[in-house]
Length: 157
Image 1 (tube, helix red, strand yellow):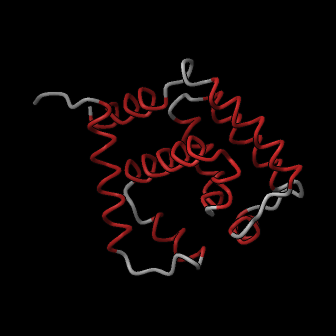
Image 2 (tube, rainbow, N blue to C red):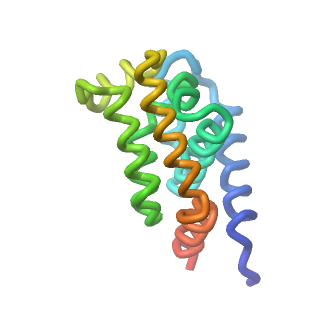
Image 3 (tube, helix red, strand yellow):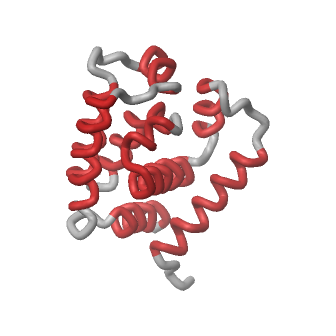
């Protein structure tokens, strides 16, 4: 069997995850329903979905947009996935955003409920912007497509 490229593998898994989420019957305004629906994806689909959504949000509008679009409910999982695929520097930046938007250190459901409708303050936006710059500067040092793709290729071998 011919080896599929990392980009093609990620694209297929993302399309599969996105199709399942679009077909699922859940209330996007209910963080628990959305979160639980994402949890029903396979591990590779979930990893790809979370990393792609992080990258899209940060590339388009920074971490402020990432949190404003409610994807912040997945931040602890995203940091875990990044560490798992050996994207340690990116994981550190993502973890740093947690301390900016969640200074009281809420965990689990309390964190998700708090972060679901967060509107970052001006000070938080400034601090998140510094994380945006750090994230952008890692592009040539930690290629998420390569790291994620190589990890996923290892799962199938």
